[in-house]
Amino acid sequence: MSSIKIELRQEDVNKIKEICTSFNNDPQELINVLHKCQEHFGYLPAEVQEVISNELVVPVAKIYGVVTFYSFFTMTPKGKHPVSICMGTACYVRGAEKVLDEFKKELGLQVGQTTNDGKFSLSSLRCVGACGLAPVVMVGDKTYGRVAPDDVRNILKEYEEGK
Image (tube, rainbow, N blue to C red; front, side, top):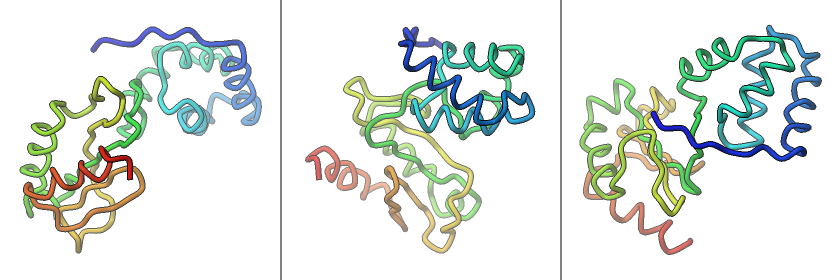
């Protein structure tokens, strides 16, 4: 996996330190610290993990392990319009895989990637809790239910036109 090398500005370092301090620099609060940092930065690059490591006195390897274990955390920036396809049982049984394949084809992406223009990123989820609407797709905070592969192009058009 190629990682993007970023340069943290001093204000970014200060923000991470502030988040860590808000949890009393307690190593047991690692997941909460990671959530807050991802909320702020949009993702958790290695450079952010290193600052957290120093502040909480937790090995970087442990932080990396947590970030890569939980699917919520990401080390790559999400697109302006993050597209998530639910792959929970109900959605999967009702054809979510074909919907996901159509998004891959239309966007030219694999799961976990972002388009070069930064507009779309693609991910899959375990369950969004809208099983009655299976298969479900989320674009940002908007939920689309009973999505068929034929619907994919129209869903993407909504965002390409900047609506």
